[in-house]
Amino acid sequence: MLTLFLQAQPQGSSSMMLIMMGVMFVGFYFLMIRPQMRKQKQEKNFQENLKVGTRVVLTSGLHGRIAQVQDDGFVIETLSGKLKFEKAAVSREMTESRFGDKSKTADKADKKETETEEKK
Image (cartoon, rainbow, N blue to C red; front, side):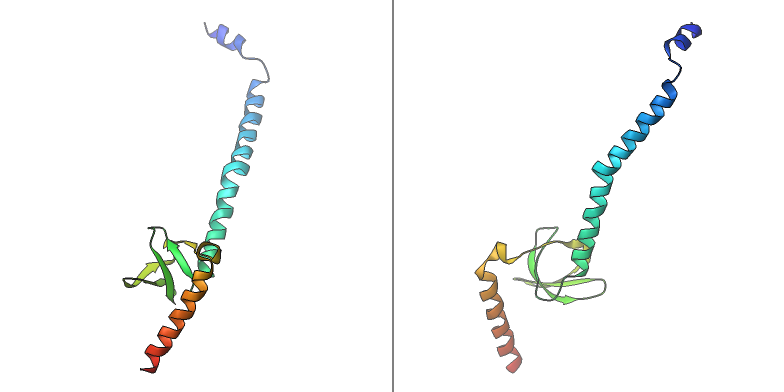
């Protein structure tokens, strides 16, 4: 019975199997691992470069504006008040393409409002 199994395997099959495993690993690296690493790097750079006044969306779906940048997180200003979140919680930036001219007028109105509060 053992001789049947030994006869079924051709001579160079183990080296061919190693080559196929290597090709599969290289394929996984270029199709899955490398793009994921690139995405993580871009996300980290994005989170490190956020500034005060930027409108953001958090991973929880909360929309707000960055009020303070701290070394361990952000203070996000929402309609209900100010909340502190970790830097990793920021999902994406709400750009002018999302808000259009509303973001510019809202920013101007907020600046005027804070100026009048500071004068009082």
